[in-house]
Length: 300
Image 1 (cartoon, rainbow, N blue to C red):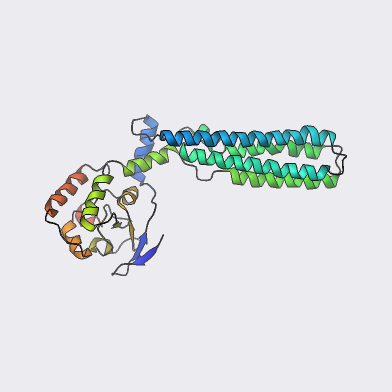
Image 2 (image 1 turned 60 degrees about the vertical axis):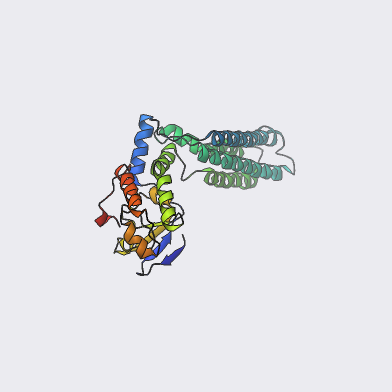
């Protein structure tokens, strides 16, 4: 996030992405739980791309398990006495790891496009951590058989077994999804951005010439610029946040302030002849906002 300062000295933080508000998340969880029409669904294009990524992921995983089978049923059983055996086994272990990780990356991309529901915890866990599960399947039997192999000496077992364990751990970490996407997350984003974004964007752009607003962490609405008096009042973190209208709504702001005439002067913008009509339009939008809008005296 880029940073600058307002005339009051408060730090201005440009926000490119904001987490949906708790209210939006609550509405999203209820929508998913009750399977309402408001639940987010991937587009046909996203669904198709996710399917392609999953097919590619499965192909890489099948190749990884096939390489494991070759190592178990050919190398360990029939070739352990050959001089090149250890190098071939090491190469096989590395190859299995690469195939498993590449497959997992495609699988994670698919889950971003077509995620599971948090309300179905078993499926959510399996779908998002399938790459870790596949990595374990691709390595654990091989590791066990390496240490149980009677034809390998201690040094060979230490080198091959230790490498296999290290690659398994690395593959597992690279395959794990530590912040998986979910239908609830996408629905929360949709709830935060639905309905009034287009109307407010049009209003703000008409007033200022750009889709750019400011807000504070504790305020309920957003404002026309960083020099608006409302955002320069003392606040919890003493920061002013700026971004487009959609980002402001995602951050939990319910709409534009009604102090439009005052802020046009504070921000150096011309006051249009239809400003009263614009204020009335904002008042109507705020009256139908999905989240409660505080009184103007405390909305900074």
